[in-house]
Length: 291
Image 1: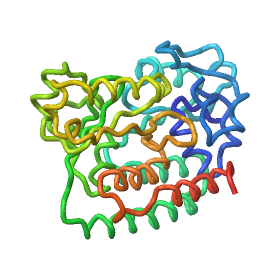
Image 2: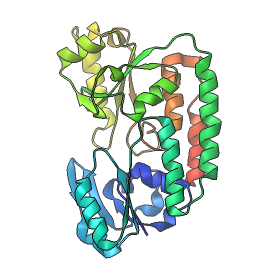
Image 3: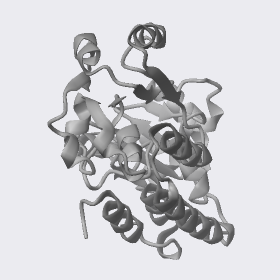
Image 4: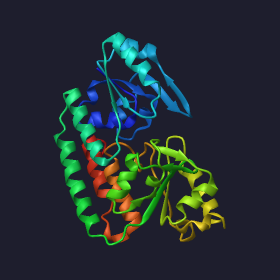
């Protein structure tokens, strides 16, 4: 039996053919477009409406053999999780994705740990990453990109989304922030000083931030003389992209990031980059949620 906290890792478990082994889920997984078959599974944790909680009693009842989570920004203390797992005889696997290659390797590890089959997912990665590399290699310019969560929270160079930007033939300015944190908050004045040369800003939705809220933030930016000191704002290059769990969200630490790279490339390079809809449909076919 498998207990999975992040929806992104549950997607990987499904794509290596072991969704049937998942017996405990984080509450957010119920919202995941790719995982309809898991919505009635016992909830072992929640991170909705900024409420962090782990249900140790449910975990104890399930008694999983494997517990999956990210090494960063956990719903709980990793020490507490390891201690709990030791008491019930479970293995804990904590993963961290700094690059897209780490994401691919993480899928292989999950397949190995769950007795899954990585072949179909591996072929999907190989085919699209090869195509993306070929397209990106032909690009002459590398636009400067900053990604933001919930206001002015910058995606840093230790976040796999930063590497996705690079894969799309752009430069991720979040690397300028020397920090191990995946997302770093800044005041507006500091952001403008550090990132005034950005060519594109990406505002990311999440399970906590709906697109309507980001539309308000974008409109405020575009109407602000102070924000127009940022090149991307002055030129109107402020994009809203999905990092939530709906069908249109691809900025996630899961195989969804492959169509996400195409989406980034399309927004910053235009017609020269292939459309994201084809790889998205291919991924959803692999997930079994679309034909």
